[in-house]
Every structure is written in structure tokens, then in C-alpha cells.
Length: 272
Length: 137
Ligand SMILES: Nc1nc2c(ncn2[C@@H]2O[C@H](COP(=O)(O)OP(=O)(O)OP(=O)(O)O)[C@@H](O)[C@H]2O)c(=O)[nH]1
Ligand SMILES: [Mg+2]
Image 1 (cartoon, rainbow over the protein chains, first blue to last red):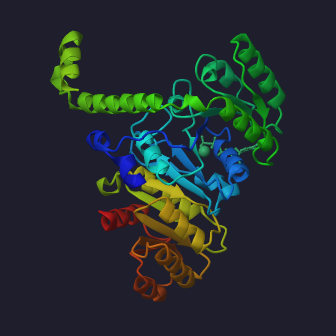
Image 2 (spheres, chains in turn yellow, cyan):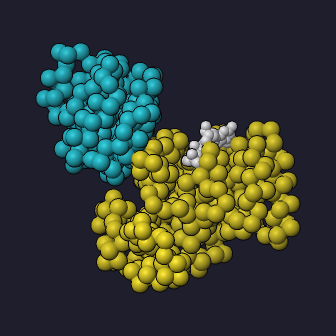
Image 3 (cartoon, chains in turn orange, blue):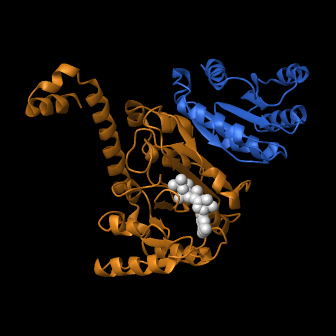
């Protein structure tokens, strides 16, 4: 099945897709606020990690407009460092109906990629707020990218993504405020007893990218068992049920919304 | 951006690219936004890309259409090269649109190369979007 087909398939089609056991390729998730520098950083990181015997795939997700359903997929243009490298495959995807920072059918798309034998797969999530961390279920390593000038962001995310990330990047480290951000972040991590590397990077100048790449290697070394088949399967099931639920809710007729909540609940469950 | 939704563009993937050396992409960006607002998924690849790069990106991204914005005047050569590169990757039948400052005399040459639509900068945005939608429906 081609990637477009996998990405656009309906719930029914996705159910008949072959079982996609996680392939040999580790998935590296890169997440963080809009504009934090995820795409630029991925370009640098992939340029450093790609080898003739380790081709790389990048799935770059940008948000779909809730109004028109369309999207402007602008991540590829920021991945200057790898544009044109024949060992790197970049695929831009709209978030479509997904609200977890990923896209509908991301697990099926990963399954299709597995067949091509890439050495590693990177996923760039949409710029996330507090509650979107779907990539955790799919990634062997999750990198959270922060930038200075968004100090409130650390504050806002304390309970969310900070607990799911494996490696923290303070990007745009050459800008004022980077040290303060790092200090704030370290303080939050310490208070929550999260032990994870914090790495200062400047994706525009490539500074710190080597250190990040090493941190990823070290993390993958000690945690290869995390990306289990069960985790991916659970993720697929959850996203298919959520999509089916949206379909069913869309079919609830206007007048039915006046029914008691318990009745609505039963009738929706029955139709799932 | 006021282009209205075009059912025919929903879920369609369109790559917008600028081959050649001119450094103005305001027009390409305006078209990108209009197509998005009409429901398409639009990938913009930026300035000064080679025909080989553009063709590879169009194939990798598995797009339904490729839009080339060319202001440099060398549109016929650039479009011909892009079709060659597409064909070399098994995508010679890609729906290709060209926008920019295209003299009327060159229209036919572009259409003979296989271009599905030629848009001049003075065309109304809504008409451009509608024509792309019709061609992809
Ligand atoms: N000063 C500085 N700017 C950077 C750095 N890294 C990225 N940028 C800039 O930050 C802006 C956003 O970068 P992107 O890579 O597009 O950020 P992103 O997180 O992928 O953004 P979205 O995909 O829109 O969420 C661009 O203008 C980059 O050039 C950096 O290390 N230093
Ligand atoms: Mg990005």
C-alpha cells in the first residue's frame, strides 16, 4: 500500500491493512512548540546520522486547517541540511483529523515505511501545546525542543510533555534567555525527579547537534525494548476507535442532542 | 485569503516550487495559501530549486499536481527540464501547472510540453484555484 493510501485510508481500510509489527528501524519523535526549530534541527540531525548503510526517513506533520481542511506543509523547506540527499526520504503529512500532534493512520504509514528498510525514522509532530503527545506511544526516543523567550511554555507544560520526553533540547541557544530557560527546565526536571539529558543546541549553526546525536544513541542503546509491538498496536487501536467515534458523533442528528446524556451515551456506544 | 472551499481540492496534495534564479516568491506563497484555504494540502519547497530536486520532491511526496512559479523568463527550458526529470522518475504524466509572467506566445509551447494550465500574474486568484480544482477533479 502506498503511503498516501495508508495516510488517507478509512477506518475500515485500516482494519484490513496487514499487521504492522514495528520494524527494525527505531522511531525518533521530535516534538515542541510551534516555531521552536524542530524542522531545522531535524535537518541537521539527519545530516549527521545518515550513512550509506543507514538511510533515513522523515515524516513531517503540520496542522490541517479546521476550517478548510487544507494545510500548508512547510517543514520540508526548513530541512535545508538534507534537501536533495538521496539517502533521505522526506514525507510531509497534514494532521487531518488527529488531535494528538500526529496524523490519522500514522501507525499504518510507519508500517508502509518499514517495508523499505530505512535505518531510522524521524517524526516531526505538529507544534504541540500541552495535551498532544501521541508520539510517545510510537517513538523509541522522544526529543522535546524548547526555545528561549517562551519561558511560560515550560511553566505551562510542567505536567504534560515534560513527563514523556526522553531528551530535552534548548534550541536557539545563541539567543538571549537560553541560559535562563535551561535553568528553569533543569529546576522543573529536578523537582519532578525526571532524569533526562538537557542539551543546548543552535540548529542554525549546527552547534550542539553532535551532542544531541550522541545522546540519542546512548538513549536508544539502553531502551530498545520500549517500542514494543504491543505499544504500537494499542496506539493503532486507540486511534481507530477515536476516529470511529468522531464519525458516529457526526451522524448524531440535531434533535437527538436533546435526549438525556445517559441515553445518548448508550446509543453512541451501540453504534461504535 | 478569501478563496472559498473547492470540494475537488479536498485531500489533494499539491507541490509548489520555484525553479530558476528569480528571488520573488510572494506570488507562490499567495497561491499556496489560496489552495490551502480551498482545501488542498500544499507543500512549498522554496526558492531556486533545480528541476531534478523538484521532480524528486514531487515523487517522494506523491503529489497529485505540481505548480511551478517562474518569473525569470526561462520558463520553457525549465518546464521542459522538469518534465524530463519527472519522466526519468516514472512520473511523466504528473499534472503540471505553470504560473508567472508568461507571454501569450509561449503558452502553446508550454501546453505542448504537457502543462495542464498556464496562469499569469494578473489572473484572479479565485479563477486560478477553480481551474486547478477542475483539472484535478
Ligand atoms: N536564532 C535561531 N533561529 C532558529 C534556530 N533554529 C531554528 N530557527 C528559526 O526558527 C524558525 C522556526 O524554525 P522551524 O525549524 O521551522 O521550527 P518548527 O518547530 O519546525 O516550526 P513548526 O513546524 O511550524 O512548528 C525559523 O525561522 C528558523 O530559521 C536557532 O538555533 N537559532
Ligand atoms: Mg516544522
